[in-house]
Image (cartoon, rainbow, N blue to C red):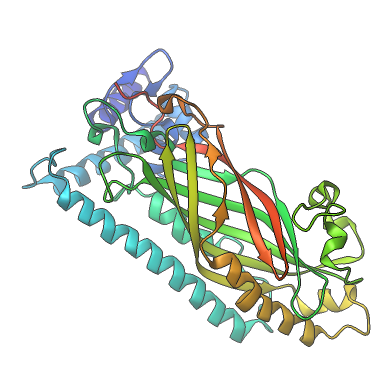
Length: 379
């Protein structure tokens, strides 16, 4: 087993560089990233890297890493290394790749909406992961990585965005009450995952990065149809009551979840010393209604399900259109004044504004860093 483990580590070093025996980690790439490249879970890779795997697991892993090395060799045959001073070809390839991610994700949302609109009666419940998988594929595959790598950084390491690259998630859900011709509708932002990458094609300062984000949110209906100001702090047209924002609508019989909202969102971030500015807009959206039988059992007899759905569709096309326009947010404090020390678990917190008729409602969106692409210190 010891000999198999040594062979495995040696092949990994060939592809991923220096290995730290003390903590069983590589200098430039996280173990989670390598596990994904080999199509292993973190726990499976942990057994391999810590020499607790079986002989069969080691033999299969050796075959997997060898295939990656062979693939690298084929890709690099006849190709000269990309110089730091001339990255135009590399940047062009990244642009093509990211354009493909945007198009595929937007088309996927549109295609899914078309398909489910025509088959919802027979198949009202859709795969919750369908929309996210395309975005995940774009950033978590072993063939093309859209991130700026450690070896591509300038010699002085003055490139702040490199530590922000990787996967971020929405920390806390938030709620926004809104209306069209009538009150009673509530938007609950519940889940979001964002992949962030340096925008090296824009400039060489490293002060800009972008995020491609999948959001799975919800629309709820208040059977009492209370007006919006019922959920705002008394005397304010902007501040949402904390008790409302922290409440669990599923435990309140007056509220009925009507639909899921799936959104593909692109955000640009600008680093200015200790502040991070955020701007962006939605690129695609799909509404997934809850099963009709479930809704009928929870709504009042006098409530028209068809009318309610028409309202939701109109909200998606009109009221949520405001949510698709360039967002209005105050800058966030950088997670650390020394960008080289930014790490998993750090947060970016933005106080933003959403326009609802005569109301401009405040809400907070906080991202927490879940999976950092480069967790080493540039030297």
